Length: 199
Image (cartoon, rainbow, N blue to C red; front, side, top):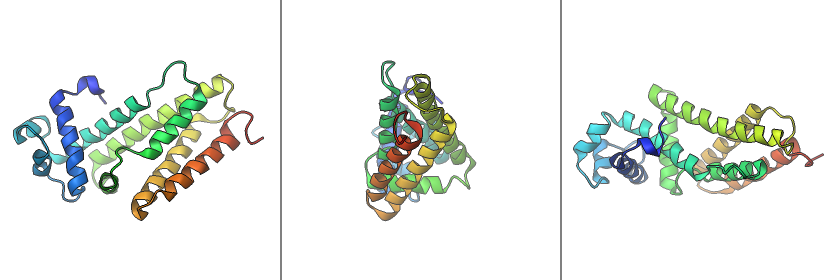
């Protein structure tokens, strides 16, 4: 997957138009024309870069992950515990604040079992997030701030809890599942991961 350095200004503008179109129409009613309506340049430019809606949405998922990774990019001197806490906060906030966008993303996820390109994109994104979390846990273990836990297992546990919270938040239209999950993740980290906590 590329980073922002590999994405042209036009492609970035298309991604921003896609975000607006998803908020406005949802996944089910999203068309290339709807995206073009949100795009300040010609529709032909969209088709020049992306042959199909499927291809464009796969690129959009990559764009969202790149945006997230830029937001949580760790500094070398950051404490592993603080970094892990910040990652959890960022994951629970989700991409985009608009409720309509969160619903559209849930619709898109629901297509993953049937559309191989979406399934592969979500799997690749999940793998990158899992790696980021696991690397942070490894840093904490090496710094003797975390216990000798399995970094991949900790990452998987956090991601499963985050996915559940975000899904329930969209389904029920409130933030209670997110807030409850944040407390649950805190409890898990203090009792199972952080050295000196929960002992």
